[in-house]
Image (cartoon, rainbow, N blue to C red; front, side, top):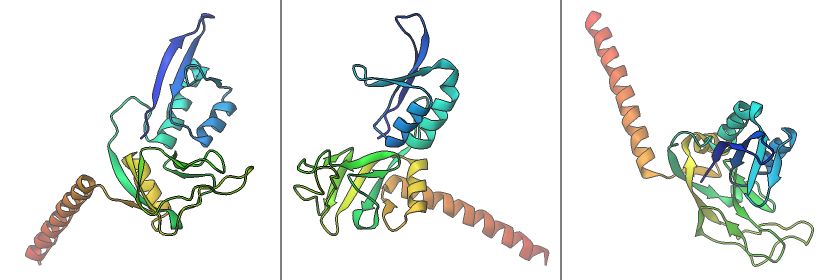
Length: 193
C-alpha cells in the first residue's frame, strides 16, 4: 500500500534536499505546500529542505504508516462502502482506495479489489464527480500498515474490519497468553487464601 521513499539528494544547484515519493494523499499535498515543498512531475516527487527531514518522516508515519525506513507489518481490511464517507474518492488509512477522476470516468482502485457490488459507469456532475457505488458495495484494501488499519477500525468500526487471517491468529495467540498469565495470577492468589 504505502510505498514511501525518502532520501537525501544533491540538486544540480548544489543544494541538498529531501526527496519524497509517496502515494497521492490530499493531506500530504497540503502538508507539503505548508512546508514549502516543491513538486517535480518528472520524478513524481516532492522536494524539501533537509532541515525538515524529521517533520517529513513523522508526517509520513502518520499518514502512510511508514517513513520508508523499516519494514512495516501490513494487513488486509474490508470496507463496507455504505458505512464510509466518500465523495469523488474514498480515503482509508491515508490512501485513496477508490477514486473517480471525472464524472464519466471509471472508478480507479488502488491496491483494492471489489468483493461485492461495484460502481456506476458515471457519478456526480462535471464539477463534482462522485464514486456512485451500488448499495452493498464491499472493497478489500491490501497491504495496509497495521497501525493505520487499527486506527481505521477504531474510528469507523461499521465501515472497516481487519480480515487478514495471519493477523487475527497472532491476536488470538497474544490474547491467550495474556489470559493464561492472568489465570496463573488468580491461581497464586487462591493458594495464598
